[in-house]
Image 1 (tube, rainbow, N blue to C red):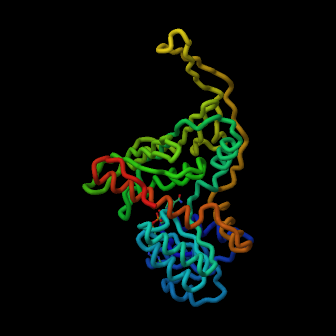
Image 2: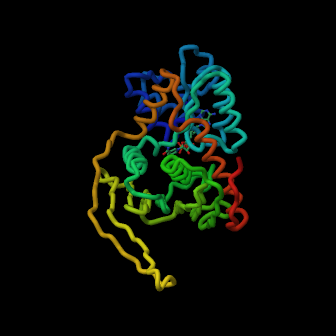
Image 3: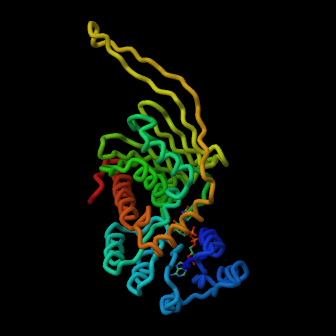
Amino acid sequence: MVGFGYWGPNIARNLENSEDTELAYICELDKDKRGRAEKLFPSSKAISDYDRVLDDKSVEGIVIVTNSKSHFPLAKKALERGKHVMLEKPITETSGQALELVKIAERKNLILMVGHTFLYNGGVRKLKEIIDSGNIGKWLYAYAIRVSLGPYRSDANVVWDLAPHDISVLLYLKGKKVMSVSVRANCSLKEGIPDVAFMVLKFEDDTIAHIHASWLDPLKVRKLTIIGSEKMVIFDDIEPLEKVKIFEKSATISYAPETFSEFQAAYNYGDILIPKIDVTEPLKMECQHFVDCIRSGSKPVSDGMNGLEVVRVLEAAQKSLESGGRDIEVSE
Ligand SMILES: NC(=O)c1ccc[n+]([C@@H]2O[C@H](COP(=O)([O-])OP(=O)(O)OC[C@H]3O[C@@H](n4cnc5c(N)ncnc54)[C@H](O)[C@@H]3O)[C@@H](O)[C@H]2O)c1
């Protein structure tokens, strides 16, 4: 594993606890953090020289948990040296870099996976099951809220830091491409670093989704609401157990033939259902999935192409926020 900052120890714990992995090295540039890694994971070697990891033929896979700027060079080097790679989100800083990694991984027949953690969340998996079964009817629209007080990052703005999660979840649940994005953002505390953003995504089926991402909010909220023609569902990741709620609520509009211009709305209020979900730690599922894909050679749920698609949306979002909210097409 490379990078032992804020997020790295969580991944290290899951790699260490798995029966299928041996966490051979923790590679970290900062001496104090290496000292911490040595204390917490004494059976792994805490080192600063990345080449030492790449030279070790017994190392099959590398998990990169560094700042996004270093994702591309570290991952490219690892793939070129024949190692399977899992990268934290966002996969890279540009879509060109992501595409290059996808091509190298394909050419060398290696697994390239991105840590879109929410795709391994039992609640999101349950939502996917509900939506794919046709239970909510036609998908009408959706909105996600991902806000809290910090943590502020120096290497990314709030769009690149928080929105990858909701973009990846929406792409996964809908199975449709995002065609364009429009973003209004505010630099509340530091000039040039947007810390609150309101994004509208337009999908290829003409539906829209809104994402509210913020580092400056009194509450920690991680919520996704999907409105269907038959039912409405809410995924609330802050809830410990009751993460998914299905509301049997809907509205229909009917027109009387003789008074075509007038319509009547009928509202349906039914039960609220709370399905049982798998509450296994998503990061454990994610790390296990990486290992399973290496063993079986199968395509990860969050593969390099999935990472690339999210970065394409982020690039359009960045252009949009820089142009004061213009609707920007997502490039192919
Ligand atoms: N999936 C999630 O829910 C989630 C949550 C938080 C962060 N992340 C992602 O994890 C990544 C790391 O985030 P963080 O908050 O831990 O950042 P961080 O800045 O706290 O830690 C990054 C660490 O990487 C080390 N590092 C940088 N370049 C290195 C190199 N070349 N070799 C070895 N070590 C190097 C730094 O010294 C630092 O300790 C980011 O991509 C972030 O987006 C994901």
